[in-house]
Length: 554
Image (tube, rainbow, N blue to C red; front, side):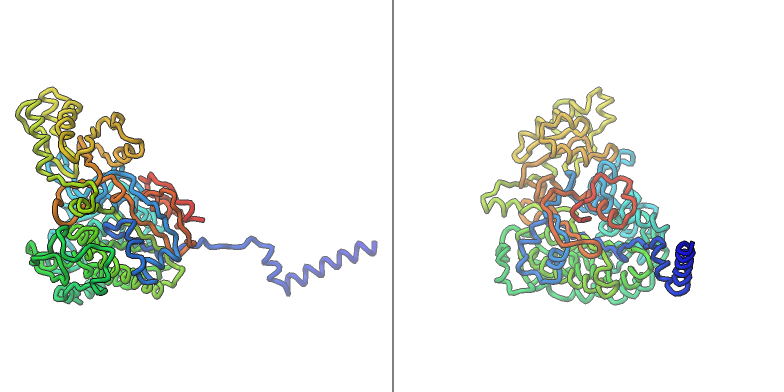
């Protein structure tokens, strides 16, 4: 009896002491409350026309704080590829951020033929929108042609619109498609007056910070400067000689050599600035002005800044992949990336923001340059292919407007005329195929209406399946041999094929939630949006066909 009473008293005493003097002990017995951690800012960087090998070709000349910082402290997906055949700017930006494919998103190219309207349609055109920032037709743009959501849209949905999303690029499509449907704004550069503008889809007027930025008149400062090489020109041993036969010219120049100046062209005073590293400086300054002006990363939720550097594409098209101009561009862009990372450190703190970097497509070597190195290559004129196909159809079916349009290696057939004359698409396809296979450089001709009949490896067949949208794609697709391009017989280069030089692009993740590492497992552009969605713990975009990259998430 005594022992029981003593035990009872002892227990009451311990409870009394714990209640009054040891509240922390009591608290330990309660479930621990946690808050889901997310980065305060996500920055998506797209480098227009950046092939994967550029990370390594110029590696020894990069600083420690730009591309190398992302590679050293981040995660590198070294074998990252596009998952569809149309490697162009519009689709690239759309599918980096949507994780989708042209077959679902509708962004099949930069432009496509609209059968109902009977005309070409630009990927971000919007005839109902008006410019904000000036009165230019360059502002008649929006994301309405994009049929799926983006990771930026999903972030907006997940936070009931509290997250801010801003897109910035020289090109309208490079700003609009990444920012998505629900963005606060997208801003792009108008070469006519040198202003950064937006669209009435987003805004009624430019915010004060954007007006002040335009008021700095940076384009006027850059337009009077010369583009000189960053290093002594004899150090650019990764590139061809400065004066060669493989490059195009800037407006007003007679030779494609340094230093370069900037003359007005096509009635646009600032157009040629795009084809220089000054375009990157304009983009960087505008992006950082948006970050500060919108107070991104400081609002208590995750914000998203979408930045696309368009100048590498303009420079690559004009001068080609082996040029000193391209090398100098990337050495300077490396320093721009370093400046941006330092600015993010200062704005939100290192470790509090997430960055990913990729590219909308790669680029082929100039055919004449390839030939000089003994590599099979060539060029085909747009008009030549169209003329051969048209003549073959008229010979087989008689006179008629059998082809409505040829664009981006695709024939849009006159389906109404075929039905009226009682011919099938399959018959027209066979006529075109037999005629074009006689042409040097044509590897294959594909019937989009019967892809299962295409005698190509399954991996290649999937590239066609992913690119075909029934209302926006053509009926017949022309596949050139590797190294062959439409146009660009002499200077510069282009892209748009299904070969590795166009599909293999960088993919780097850095910052919040990312541990250093790399993988050589094949990943795809469609994997980026679901990976970012997993990091943010939000729903993946509704048209996603990719998978989260597990190595990045570990």
